[in-house]
Image 1: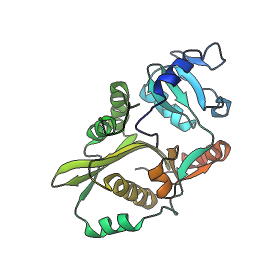
Image 2: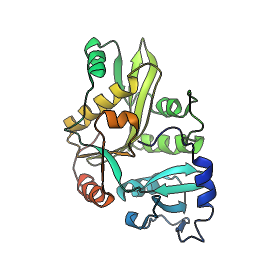
Image 3: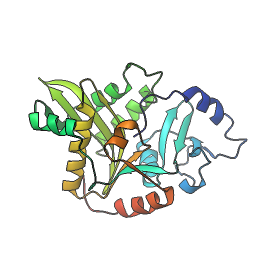
Image 4: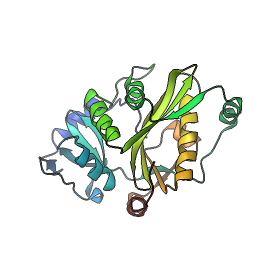
Length: 239
């Protein structure tokens, strides 16, 4: 999942302003994307376009995701991080919290609020890539049945969550948040369990973070990722 903080955001913005002259395609109103394999060394595929439902779905089917809204940038890093659904690691501290069970897990009950939680200020976070434009765009995806959330609650209060995009047997984990220890990890645990039960084949987390590395997230070459993606989106399943 993309890290919620983006300390290099301003540097990347300055960089992508030069994208046209550097040969990175600039998108217009036509809904299309270059081949993900054409990304530059940082993983930038294109700049511009919009965050419409149609364009977002095409992006994820193509192995591409948006990261900044101003300017709008599209990425496909190499390597690509994923969770192998059969190899998710449950640390001892997480297993203890799961056994205690002093929480409630819900699905798709508070999608926008989960996104807002992911975007909210937190200690050590310089900035966030989840702008109001992203919240609106992914909420539209959710309303159309393509984006989903898992929520963690205690005493009815939303204290953690994870959200992402589902197409066929593919799920792109976008971001997560927690307000109590282990809440986001518990959401990931239940997300993996849910995807396995539903017959999903690929859980994309885009880039490794310390948390996802601890839970056994791995990097694979972009070429292998795109092959797995092509097969996963063909599967006849749903979230």
